[in-house]
Image (cartoon, rainbow, N blue to C red):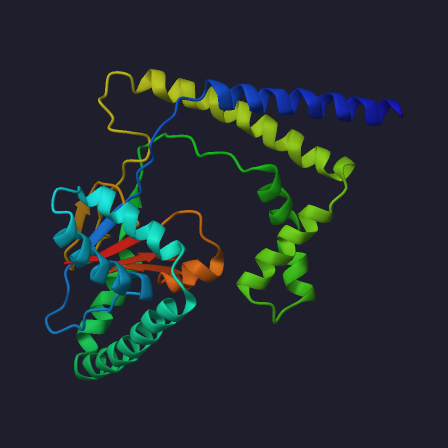
Length: 281
């Protein structure tokens, strides 16, 4: 092994040890996601639940009658487990039912927007102009080695494949990283480790300066309207709870109402492009 190769591998091993130590030392913290509450326009159609949402609604009534002393969390966990082993026929029944309701919902939505162009414009304006203000001075979390690699080749891959969708681009980048030789990964792992060290140092300094303040948690945010936006925005702190098991593949997530951009849980629309869940009142 050459001197340069030995130095790189030694740096890589040290970097990996630093990452492992930081993960062990890091306190376990239950993260909370920010979300915003927007006022539902009068007469705006209500989005129907997903196939799983319809299933939960039916099963919830059944188990509430059968076991009235059971807590809501226990009941939700039971229903999620039942759905994971449910037969295909039952799942297809709820999928078709959800699809028909969604078609009806889209028709009502188009009709409402055609009759209320100003109302639709107001919704779009609120979604685009709401700004999220984090704690001032809080350091930004560093990128992982994979993210650093993906960012370095994203534009070139997109340039070579201009018609490639966002989903296919992500799959392509992941496959390239998977096939990348270990000796070519070294620089990204080392860079990620260095950024992680800087982040930990900045975070400690930030926490020392903010020690006198009673911060709720590191992920608390406040939603405020931008200048000139007269639409109402209500800041809301809390946790977004998904009534379905977390270990699901992409197809199962699609069954639960996830289309790659939005996560719909009954009245909840989680919009990754806007920057957080949107809760209709």
